[in-house]
Length: 482
Image (cartoon, rainbow, N blue to C red; front, top):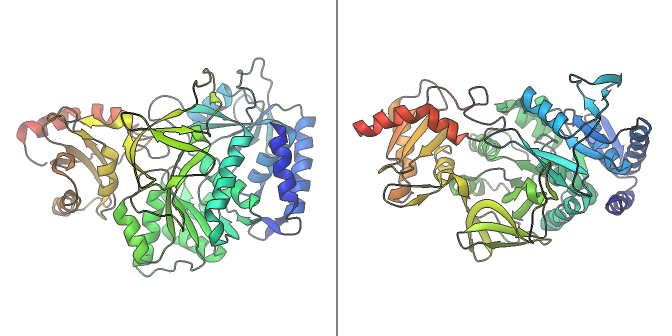
């Protein structure tokens, strides 16, 4: 495992005098980065550390401690700030963390600035070669720990460097939390392998707070200040960027490669971005494959698809359309046996169009109408939330003769007529079996606080059904919109 780390640090040493990391006025060259990483790695070993949890805001120190754990041969576990306090405790305990870097937690003793220690008598057994455990916030239960080795992470990063090479990315701005595996690998490891400059800012300075707080003015101000060549955005952030550009708000002309992933992206939104000449490239990945699996590139791009498979892996489809991946996979979930066989089942459904993977949605989310039609609700929901009046949407139609959507208005006083117009606009582009036939106004936004969404915004579909089933039953009995 550590030969992969040696290879990584040897590669970084080739860029010695170039600036590697920047956070405001603070910068580190590649040579300075390697020196700081080695010193911190030695310090972690001197403390007797085995498993390190990172609970810091985005910044240079996050990257240095992450790389220091690699240098010291330790297991690193990023702790997302958007997790609830209970979820964070679950991460620390299930992973057997003995060193916490960041804010303290119950049971940990502060030994120096930002470093907290505790004794763990019997830490959970790990899959061999685990160097990072990334936790996925599932829609049910506690987050699951995905055990990864370094070679797989670097294979992904190397493929991403190749995919974006023609755009000569020299400056990347980290927008997503570094505890998110996508930003960790595609936003830090990949740019560093390419000798680029990684720009870092505290999340609040970028305009992101908590699981869903967003300040557009701060976001645009950060982009203007840094003038990055590349970004990684979630669909909602892309919608904000495109909407801002359409309103003639300042968007930097320095952008060369903006990757978008983490959820279904509406083809309509990508077409709007194209009209503005924004360089948007949709991708697809999952933590179990060490992040990115497919990506559109400047040379090979197809709107409505997630791109072609990256060079280090293979993708095929099962008989039922489930996406299977070979060549990049996790070692296993923490506390569970290693997966068997060469092909990893992703749980996602899709099809290929001339080599480009088109996703339909999660296999477990697909519902079957009373007329026997299969519907992937994420497809419809992603189209709905592109409409200005709609902030969130959940579609239900299992065993029903008509589909029902529960809608959250973007603005509380939005008239029903505007919501209906938004639904009509989406329905115009859908087959009848997938259309929104009836809809309800949500009694509150879907959030982690009311347990109708996860901490990072994914819908908790079972909870939504439990919450709204009586209202849906009444609506279907009436057969009219409410």
